[in-house]
Length: 109
Image 1 (cartoon, rainbow, N blue to C red):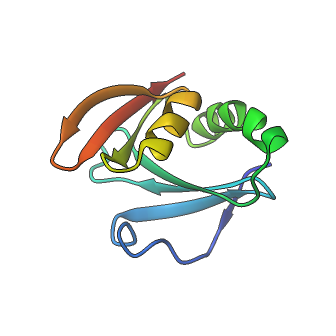
Image 2 (image 1 turned 30 degrees about the vertical axis):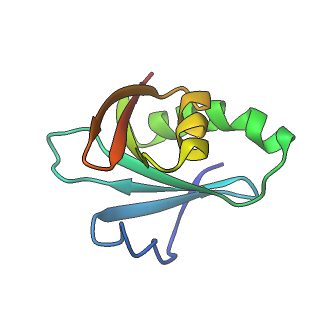
């Protein structure tokens, strides 16, 4: 039940964000494309927390990847944000490398 929405992206990623998608009451995902030849980089925000919603999140990200036809996606997390890093691992992302002040993650279906 993902739907594309028109909302403001966070300032740090607004210039790269090409679309924003909402799964009502659970999460918001933005898609950034630096090039059409590379997999997209995702950013996300939870809409409403809770254990029940968190349990659904990995399956929702898989569903989202099928929706946008992106078998491989990337995500980044700041080195100073261990909670964000742990969330990406929980969602099924695998850590690739550290560049500058960020960790790079990938997820494939």
